[in-house]
Amino acid sequence: MNGREILHKMKEKACFASTQPLTPDAGKAEGRMSKHITHGSHLVEGKSNHAMEDYLVAEFKRVDDNDLGLFAIFDGHMGHKVANYLQSHLFNNILKEHDFWKDTESAIRRAYHTTDAYILEQSDALGKGGSTAVTAILINSQKLVVANVGDSRAVISKKGVATQLSVDHEPSKEMKMIESKGGFVSNFPGDVPRVDGQLAVARAFGDKILKRHLSSEPDVVVEMIDDDTEFVILASDGLWKAMTNQEAVDSIKNIKDAHSAAKQLVAEAQSRKSRDDISCIVVKFQ
Image (cartoon, rainbow, N blue to C red; front, side, top):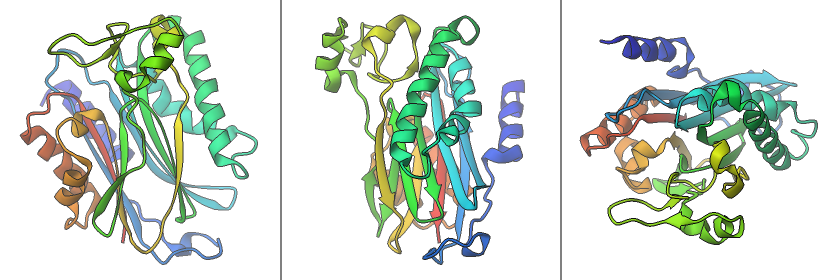
């Protein structure tokens, strides 16, 4: 095992791959569901010629007499510093918004923009690279608020049916927006569409050189957690390039342990020849 693998193992043991439960006894919110909620995660370095650029957050915490589950996948590109900064600061920035509890969606949008502005201002320290992000905030076991920029993805399973909660921000789908800002989308044979011939996503944090033609506006969706809800998967595109949403759900529907489920998804993507970094979080509602 090399030094980088040891570091990832230490991260998992510290907090990322935990399966800490959240139960109704944890708080006093009215109408709380009688579900036992656990999470698990797993990440592996890909076989591309760069250091690991994926980071994740998976934790439960108590804030202002409310129970929060905070889950996120950050997939860096052109360096890892932006993704690492997001891992440490994005949720703090969201929770600092004055109207987080009254208008969570607007608070998340503002925090995404202010965080991106700071990253651009600090490009000398953080580098000129960037990162995609998908975040999920579980409020009092009842409401899940998902936001994303880029192609890391959130998928929910209800009665065994997969539903994508995030939006893949592909350059080909947002060509008009990119061109309206003076950019272009390349489409070379044998390659994916790229903004200005470089970046394979149309929205991201950072990326100072391309920022005039990129957006950091997140798509935000609210999903209520009900008795049909089984689990949520968050993962970087290293997983989704190899598996459809439904294939991912089917792969872990009979696995009760959240950490084992996350490891199974990563192993399955690798068996399908995914060469990218892969990071995955599974949140189980049992």
